[in-house]
Image 1: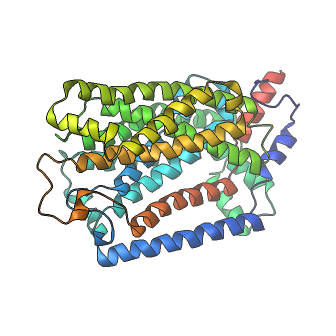
Image 2 (image 1 turned 60 degrees about the horizontal axis):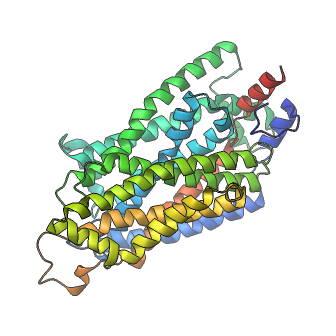
Image 3 (image 1 turned 180 degrees about the horizontal axis):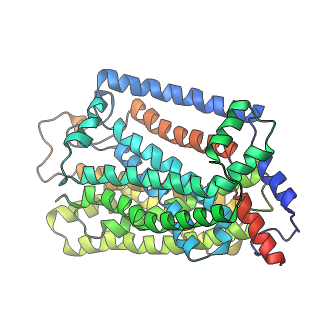
Length: 441
């Protein structure tokens, strides 16, 4: 038996019972969903205020026209890449321990990728003109490239979540008789007449493999193109040929941290200790160490190369990072959000579920603020001096509406993941049964 699964002998009936029992809309879940819904409505009220009065309600201005909205967009795109790393790269390598985690990674990928597209709209003063990007967008524009790959990545991620889910949807259709009628009907429609025949499994595996291969270049493109939005300018701090791999390596760090946090939540709340074990956390911790090591290299490269050249604009940007106005956030992100957590995870006790989850929260928080450091300081250091403008334009501070709208994006991710986890098993039942039965034989 795979050593990452429980050593307890698990029967097919027990696996089904364990992994289907949480598909119910109990009172606790309804309260949780109601809390999220009310919170989202409050955030949407602030977005209504922004539509009503324009971007003037934010802290954005002529110099910092990209604030925490675009920082948040970059963060969401980054976090969504984890589905490709776990499901595709490790899955195609037949790394067996990722099987119970693949669907969780896809849930994270789908939720963050879907909301990332909406975040772009929040940064638009006239969201009604979004259609113009599709109708009149120029191929030369990196923004058009970004929208194209985001939409493609969302579509493939949804398919990659849905197609391997078909056997479990059919199981829900056949086993869950106490759920509401609308839910039973939904399972019947989504199961697509699944009967569990060998031919159906062959087709499902073939289509899944095609998607697993296809999503790798698309996933790399989505964050590489996002990095090109910055790198294809002459602004110091953005004008860098390493931004593509730099963004991708940082994305894997944020994504691994998000999956670890989600794993912990599902393990504790859904009582999945037999399927998401201590060994899974240990291995995810090791994976996090690996991607963090690559990301540390790019962070060093980001500072040391422009610092060595020390032309006027680069020197000012580096000084701002190391000892200027942004230095406190910079060192908190680098030390508190990356180096110290990286060193802690090297020790095995820190890779146990609770410590690793807490460290992952710190890493994920640091990853968000890192995107702020990428987006904002460069805009505050234009080639021409900031003069004859209001004093507040010399710095950037997000307003309450900005913070509320940004918070709303995280709430929407939680709603998507919470609802999906209550409609479908978060652990692939048919794969677990298949692996355990194979190891028995």
